[in-house]
Length: 497
Length: 126
Image (cartoon, rainbow over all chains, first blue to last red; front, side, top):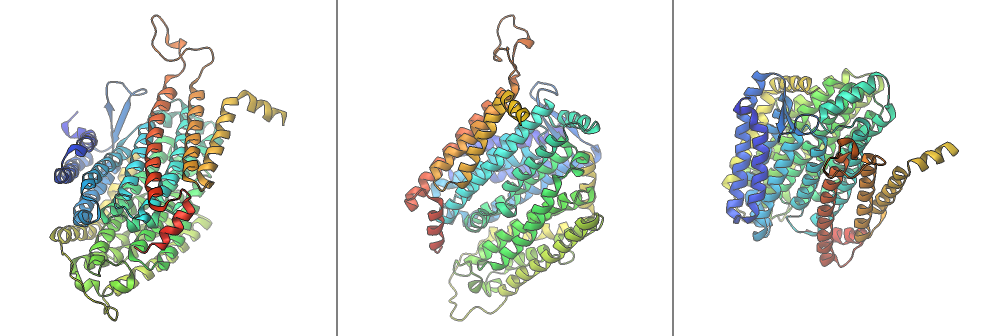
């Protein structure tokens, strides 16, 4: 075994150790430790990705000294590496870009603790991406839920507190469902490691045994993860949570936490239950229905908002709906499109959240559309970043979002019968609604300020400007290298099974 | 009908676990009072633990504690018990966080009712 193969393990341990050390550090040290840790993870992954490309395939990494059917394992493959790298980059840029706002919005003694939660979320994200053990996944789901709740209410206003209570309640229902699903899986197969479960379920599927329990397990996993991602009927906590917490927290919650949960679901489909079994199962329609509903209703929610942060939050509901619907489509092309959109949306939504907050600062700390008029002139770089992100979400060519729409459409066309029609119609309608609310906002940013608007002085931060420029560059790069990325993802998906 | 009843009776542990889960789930989802919600959560989690432990239990075998000269066949399956232990730790920390949040909310809004809290929150212009 080569040294580079330890990267997944090292990254998780780095995150865990920083999370343990951070509470006793002074505030500034905590901040830079967290930023340093995430940068280290990004660098490790940049070293790791070429290795995985040349390695071809995947390997299991034994944790501790207990071999396969008993011990705990990590598993590294191409898709895991790509996702972990993308989400770590999002984490790094979010932390840097939201740093100044955070120092103004969170009580000074509690700022160190904010970074503890960031480190825990980082550890959780990496573990959910790499783990090969279903129960480890459950434990880290809970760790992520607790730390995202703390991240949400780090800025203490009424909205975030009520939202985090709602989030906790729904999230625990979700964890309960996932735990039951894991218990049923264990009950049926007698294993907790993904490969061993997969072997047993494949045997059952071959002779048609236990079809109903397997459907129930798939349904429970889908419902649990849907609740945690804030897909349509379960999104009540989301607009308040993303709309009022500090910008770094919103970016991390929408782009790292929910994406990690979603990737776990895909992993469960491929590695635990087996994609053939999932694709032929009725329970997958649940995903399709949830996805289409939240694509449309999330966009309608966004149109009804008078406040830019809530609008971006609602748009998250609709974009998570895309991911769910295209997994629900039930084909490999659909999964590849969804994985591509996962990366695009993670990079784009975090940039939107982080550029909205300086724009609001430039408008007298108001989030209402009327006050934001002309903010694009008052604070140039965030204005450009927001426009870029909005255009990507709408699907203007050359940007990442355009290619995800193309891949979505291609995948939908390959679908069968009414599924194809539903998905294409939903895609068209949702894109139209997206274009309406995003372009409306972007145009608003470059309009004349409203009558009687008094320009108040605000602090321009160099760090925010630099990180938002990097964010913009990364988003453009995604568009330029879309073909290569989708090839990586397609190979990764083949390795996953 | 008789078949179903006898099936429920032979799997009494599972039946009880499902009943408890239903009670906890509805309490958590439908009650307005935060403390009752937390109680519901705990009932729900207990139900899950009951289900898990009962699945690992094999009648006539001992608890998985290593004793001199006992063969592996003398023990019940230790993994579900291990899972339940982990689950209990998770459940305790979750309950603690929920209670802390409840205290925070009570200090701010002087109520435990989540609906009136939401109403007051919407009134705040922030």
